Length: 396
Image 1 (cartoon, rainbow, N blue to C red):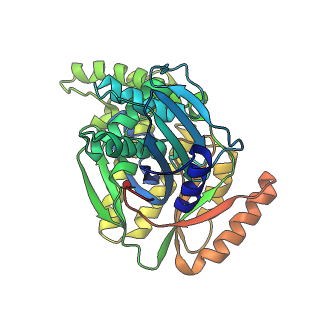
Image 2 (spheres, rainbow, N blue to C red):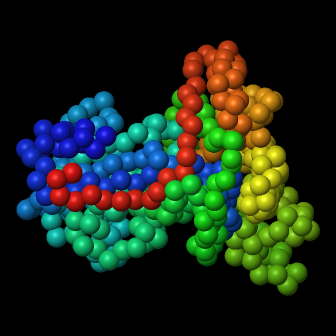
Image 3 (cartoon, rainbow, N blue to C red):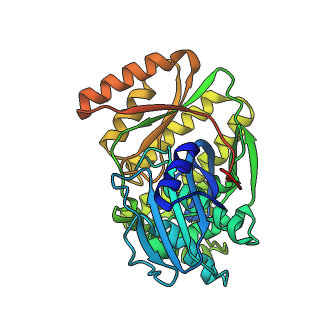
């Protein structure tokens, strides 16, 4: 990919002198879905798949963009002063959003850029291609302009870009996983405090397999933002009830399952009840899943993955027929410990933990069942946990 970027950068912009290449990984979330904007815990890992962005400074304020991953090889032009939060609907909005977020922090870029993007994350797969692009952009700008930002700040800048410039009300998980990835480890993250620790992914003779529905999801235009609004409404009702009982909460993630069950009757709206129940119970599942993994209890870890999918399907209603076919078919197979949808939902991928010896039969049976019920093929990726962002200077 880097060689392709180098050649195309020279083709598009005349030469690649003084260019820098930055990479940031995508992520897969093993468990803890839709908990990050509810102050809960998540358990993602960075992937070896990701986004590359090559760029260099210009001597004017022009911004020029091109992507190897789009059907058109057109160079899109803009200006450093031409930044329009919530109104920019082009693919370049994720890059411009990071530039805008830096500007909001008084880190104003002194000149424009020539930029070329490429990557190997499947489009619309729910593996955080947008967060990967945001973190790669932040990493590139940090290198080119000498910005004083650590990787946690890169994640926060990416989240600000996606929330306030693109208009996608995501939590911090995707950007944090991309910015803070560590090889062969998952990240156990408390999204309320940003306290985290790395947990070794010691799966021995087992594999992490991603199954792609090949149904793209468009989260910003889907019910994703509605789910966040519903969680906020449920939280306000529960806050008031908890105050009356002498407990102060800020997020749904502050409640244990037992505490939630003691106050849930105030949620007379069934939709709000189910949304909040998922957020609270999913947080508890994540805490238990990390303990299970650290005790090498993969069977328990897998069971919690299955319970997570059921909750996402029934209580949070962010699954879809394609995801259900993949997860439920996998869950019935010998050699599969657990399978669940991963990411925002409404399409994208499932993640499964399986015995290494079961890989070929897994792909055959799941693939055939999916084709039979859905009418087109799914795709499979065997993945490992990778590192966070890096840049290469000079003749890249």
